[in-house]
Image (cartoon, rainbow, N blue to C red; front, side, top):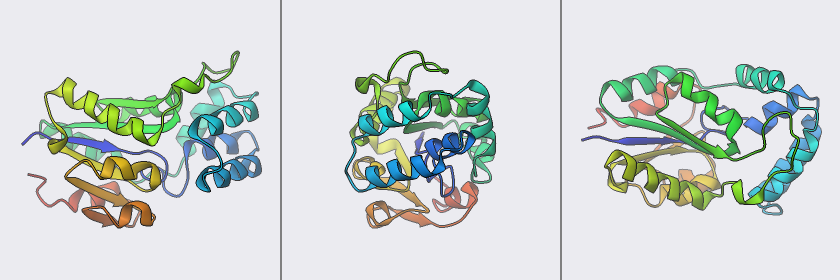
Length: 210
């Protein structure tokens, strides 16, 4: 059976960190982004409000910063190998993340069939974030449905990989899910749970994936 594997980015493919944290580290703004991350986790900020405040913080951001943040992020081992195996099986893999699209899209070079991130202005920023372009947890389900339609699949063909509350809605609508270094929001509803630093091990939890 053909499957569509849907991966979250922050905390899932990146171990214990997030695109916004890695970008902020390049700018020396770790303390400021940590405060925003806490406010978001506590439900005090929407995804759009978080993006607007992060954009204001990152006024000095350049493409070089983004590249350094991507290259220096604590990625799980084996991402390219897992995606290569998925595609060799005739299956599909995509990344759906609330993080900036200009960061998420770099994973196309690693073998993802598609990547979806929030629509931020081009770097360096010359215009503000459009709140309408910032993804929400619910958008992950909508995008999954769009990908299913594109690939001739249904939700029944999907496997979701995620770590936190933003993934919970997607986990509830697909038949197979893998909680990766996850909190209780998804570990309690996932088909499988993995703690570690190698995506190959999380992927192998599904046995022969048939």
